[in-house]
Amino acid sequence: MTYAIKAPARYVQGAGILKDLGRNAKKLGERFLVIATESGWSRFGAQVEASLTEQGKQVLFTPFHGEATKDEVFSKMDQCKEAGCDVIVGMGGGKALDTAKAAAENLDLPCVIVPTVASNDAPCSGVAVLYNDAGVVVKAVLMRRNPDLVLVDTDIIAHAPARLFSAGLGDALATFFEARACKASGAKTMARGNVSNTAMMMAQLCYDLLMEKGRDALEAVRRQEATPALEDVVEASIFLSGLGFENGGLAAAHAINDGFAQEPQAHGMYHGEKVAFGVLAQLVLEHAPKEELEQVLSFLNDTGLPLTLEQLGVREIVPGTLQKVAEAACVPTQSTKNLRADITPQEVYDAILEADRLGRAYRSQ
Image (cartoon, helix red, strand yellow):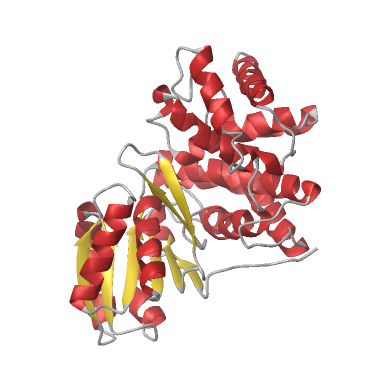
């Protein structure tokens, strides 16, 4: 058995910390290419530029066009080379960050990550997920190293949409259950090792913080306040969940999320929302105890995450389409096998329907 642990070189979190970006990144290079949406740059660009130029750095902004495709990555690489930049900064949501990570990996340049939402656990990881123009996952780029700096301004997170924060709770919720499954099955993680005690500790702490403070943190976002509860839960949903999934492994929850790419009715849902429902289906597959199911159902319900297929956008259950979801979740390259090697699409199909039944029953109480 071999353990392996990956993590960003530096993680900095706090309210108003964006003003210190330059001080934290000053040793990484001299000319910074910043990848962000036009909207993100209009809101935060002046502060980013001021912070970096105060340290004598040059800044070039390039707009992110909404999808983390290979073409987008290659375009950013070309711009970086043409401008002579030696550091790449990704600022925004998960797809903008993944574009920056993939471009930095391909060019072997330092990477700085500045999430403006806490909607998923991508910021700290050494994984960049690429999509096609239809939004379907085509490749996961496993990077040689994690970002050199992850800087999280919790005041920015507090002012982001509450639904995005809730989606991040759903993504983080999977961390413990998937790490536990990988530990039990002996599966290898994205860090190319078995699940260490350290990874399990991080995954457990992530789950404990969500259960204890997740609801209060979501209320803080609704009030647009950076409270102590919000600080703790952002640490859980960005740092602990990011390190937890990469070093603790993935299982059925994320595979079922990927499978829902086969269901057009669910295309408007966020990654973390689909993962949250995937957690419920994974617990069904594991024959989880009633108390554990009740705790998860309660958390999903209280934080606005989907307990049912209808809440996931699937208002009409089409058996053939749902079968495709289950089949996609069980292809050899997917992580459902980390739950159990011989799991079948029919079992996943049945678990999705049973999760939906449990969710509907809970909501009708």
